[in-house]
Image 1 (tube, one colour):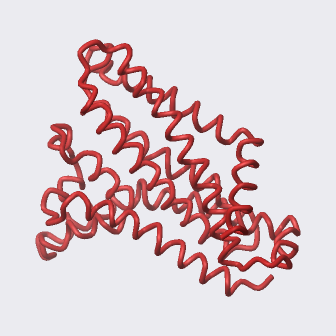
Image 2 (image 1 turned 45 degrees about the horizontal axis):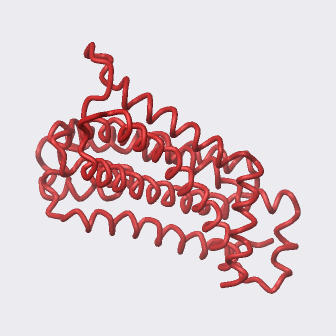
Length: 276
């Protein structure tokens, strides 16, 4: 475990030195504050509206932004070391491949977690200070759940980026695959599911379709954050299928954790088979 922490600390210090932490935190803070006060501008209303609508808007933002940031942060984790000639050197140390992978994941995961805490936490503090009649208990609960689930979503795509990095030989290839993976889960998956729903003309079992949402971590993430709010009742598109899922909230959290665990295990298996 000591070796894992050394690798994680190095990745964290590299992220701080390369301004990754500062850049991500600023992006989250600026966008979160903008959405909190200007999210209802299209309806002619400026200013903070409500906690549910703010969380719903932030969830839509994070669904697009968090996977992209996580993939950009980690797509070259292994292949970059290989191209730079340092991977073979690292593997000559008394350090297993699993320890190296886990250390890098923890380092990148800490960067994401701290960025989410600082960036979105600033928005929560601003709402608590500037909005006179806000319910502090609801605010803490809603933003706490949102930040934890956003961190988990980022970790899912960190682990998926590790899979890409372990299977490619060039950073350019890894970058292209990372972008394709983002398009698949964020844009293409839901459109394909809607197309399947329309083209099946009722031949598919209606009990099966809601379970297909669990194959997309971004849909699981949105279901977690939209459930329990009036904003969740206004969910449109493919997310309306989530109303038929016979799953409690904690099982959705478990599903996100399983995405992280299985992706990391697959990345480890691929890394062990990788020829240096």
